[in-house]
Image 1 (cartoon, helix red, strand yellow):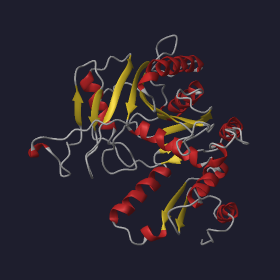
Image 2 (tube, one colour; image 1 turned 135 degrees about the horizontal axis):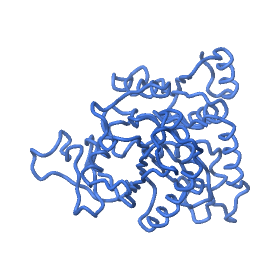
Image 3 (cartoon, rainbow, N blue to C red; image 1 turned 90 degrees about the vertical axis):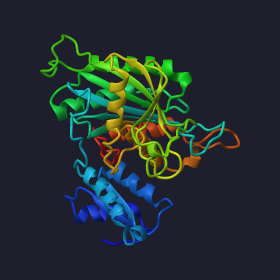
Image 4 (tube, rainbow, N blue to C red; image 1 turned 120 degrees about the vertical axis):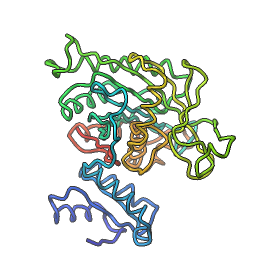
Length: 377
């Protein structure tokens, strides 16, 4: 159906739902590539209706090449529950049920910086729920401004545990936790608070446990790795025969100075300019992974990002957690309400907004659907 984009979007979408009540997804062809139209569409579909949508721009749709259509098809397939890619061999270190967990926290004042900003921080937790780690569920929460640790980590993580058991039929025996959005000065504090929250979530799991759990109490082993994207390290090959087509180091390159030190992993192939590697810090490792094994696993998982046809820069769990945070920020109507004012105050209380959105989530709304990320309650 065709409609005026300047008309009432809620009414347009309600009419579409009424005409196709069993539709599982809506595709919108937009007349332009900016403005408030896109975030408003996502707000309505995500928060009010719980129906996934795919947006394409008219100009790109009818003048695009095959790669553009492929990228759109990848997104559509995942939003409808399909699987786009799978490794030929089983992921290393996945000899027992393993959950790959990703988490991110985004300060709400990223868009409008200022000392007087009281924008809410946005926190997301994303967990794999299949043995191949190619399907994820997500939770998103709003919390007080400028908080780096995730206040409701226990309940968000427990939600992922519950859905892992529902989907896979067993509880995970390993937790591989990748954490984004943490400065080095917060490493110890984040590790202490969020691992404590994990342990409390384990205690919440009701008995009887799944058949693979033989111990009286449920206690999987945890490995926690911090993922840092913002740094100035760059690497380039000295010999021309060692470079790829973009004159960068080939995908999968690892730079380390010792077995106890953080490593740089460049899992993506270069497209333009000098590729930037990702910095991984192992903060906690009950699984006793060898450095080579953990590096191989991390690199291989970077090929499982369903929205892409090649490897990506960070593991998909963190990739999705970042996407969830930024989508949630789209739902913050009128961000200027939290930006700095002359009195340093705002008429809108961020905790009130967070409470309303959390209530929507608890009532069973689908909050986020991005790529192969599904937020189910």
